[in-house]
Length: 371
Image 1 (cartoon, rainbow, N blue to C red):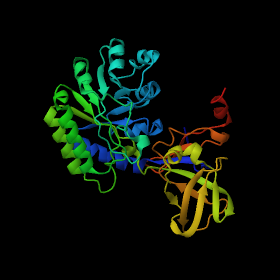
Image 2: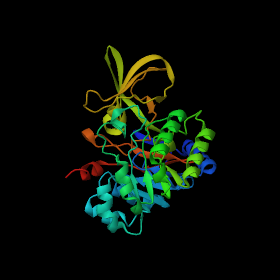
Image 3: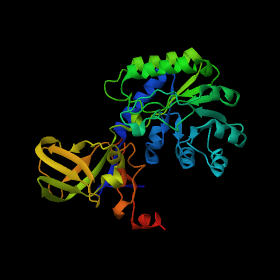
């Protein structure tokens, strides 16, 4: 790690002050509801800021062996190890790191339970209700492979379980919808939850969003926990890091095809892939909004490598800095070497205002990623 006064673009910039704002909200929910929170590493795994985050969170939750190991080595505290499908060598390795192992199916639970003897075991349940703007991310979509749908099958393995995971939300900022879904779960799984020590309600809840009814949310969680005498866990990903990072870029060229098209030294395909997958446009945080219409595009050879069409307060020209928001969740964990483009550094603005480059990449990293 290195502290520096001048940082060359492109780079991801994480602002610890903004991050702390989200973390304090999570802590507030914990204090008022009793619900613990574990960071969803599938969304955000940049361990250079874990020293701050571990002060407010209870641990990490993973979707693979590598994530479980990363959480164990760099975050500490609780490690919830889940996988859609564990391979035999992975289950033997994950027991070294996990405080809880959560299986996706009854068959894997039965097959591997002896391999993880002594560790609290959980099972992912698909409650058949969900909230998502996108079918691609809907955990209860038709033919979903995520979790057990058969309540009788869950009951058949109750003696093996200490808890359940029910991940059924994606970007849900509506408390009423969440509460109704939770009511459905209470009705369907109440007699099962009474036998459990803990339940994870997963992530996808936008409760750190401005204006979210935190007191009502906390009371609903507390009510649920007290009804079944159970420890509730949340798995914040986006909720922990929303609005805390930008992708800082520089315009390298401006071409014209009906509209001005500013090409920056980064790429949607390589550096903000989630926006390409879901066909969404990130916000531009610098320059501010104005009357000058422009398309901002990446510099890969993919025709659709476009951040979006914007109206900004100034015309863009080579050398202009452009800051792209929404650059924490599902960005750094998905970055790739498409076109061999320079990988953005990862820079943190610490609480005292200093900039620290916690990771940089070179041609050697690109070469090592191949064979």
